[in-house]
Length: 505
Image 1 (tube, one colour):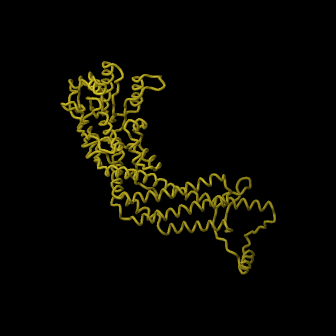
Image 2 (cartoon, one colour):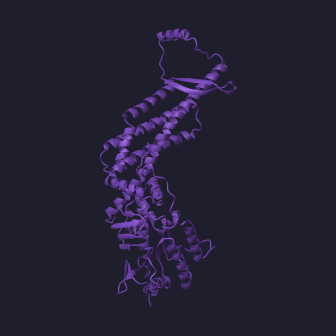
């Protein structure tokens, strides 16, 4: 059985469309988001990190996750209980395996015993999970969790669990003197081959009448040969047959145990993501932050969002930052200029985080959002000086951008923050113009925060197509509102004003 909670049935693994994962974590302040999801559970942290940094392009799968996650959020206590149960079972098995691994390679008889013990743990785990599912049956209203519940109860019904316990009891009896009936044939080089375990039987002390019947049946069945263990060589040969039978039994039950373990491992990984999302959702709603499930559409070249905000800053500061809106209908370039420390970086970071979460099938930090599916998500933010001193800041920026371009496909999205600002105004403008024209030609959507006024003004005057010109708002009194509004590119970032404010006249 396979659990299809996170991905729809028949879903094929996609190509990685966000290859520069460390850049995404640092540029988008994702660490506080991941910590909020994990709540000190390292497995949840790792699983949420893996999924959040692996956005999807399959719209049907995104909608599948949204549906499952909506149901999970409505049943947060049930998700927590399911995750805890599965995690305990997986931990018990892992500890058992780790303990046995330290003992080295076991003898065949010991290996059979270990198989029995592991199967016992899994059978008990199945019973615990089944009890959890029965107790919470009917909690979920969505089809995804309901289908999983129904399939699980059908696959692992009472008869199945009873059968597992019977087989483990039978295996235990073998290690305590039970019998294995083996058949085989003579193979190449007159060696025994083709061993098959025909039956397993429990140890039963023989009565005198049984012994008499055994002697009588031996005389009747002339084709049956009974051997004595007085011959040392014969004893060794028989012992080899017994070992072969034990190994065959162990391998059969180990294969069965592996399949059950795959189910528990898969369930733990999927439930960990849902639990992480429930943790984050609770954090956001408790702080009264806007949150919604976005509408994901195909190929419209538009992003529409109301009251979008920087989630990383919201979690770190424990307060809601200034919210903004995006009205990018048929837009490829968002060109953002304006005052220093005016909210430009937090604006594009909020857009990037929301897009990433939307393509993972998650809710987003906004009151409402409609967005398309991009075939790649990239960031290019300013970095500190190269500590090795092997390259200047501009060279480092261009090298990093070159790697991005090598991976980029048409219909991608990139967030540029103060890129090409480490050279002269004229050279920066020329680089920006060439890069952005290339993006435009390949239908790459770009958010570009810049102080390169020469380029921004030229693009504005020439009415560069499919472009929105935005700026960090500043009141007539010179106060920053940290809101991003439509407006003509600004000539200055008001750096001298900040200089006088801090250092005085």
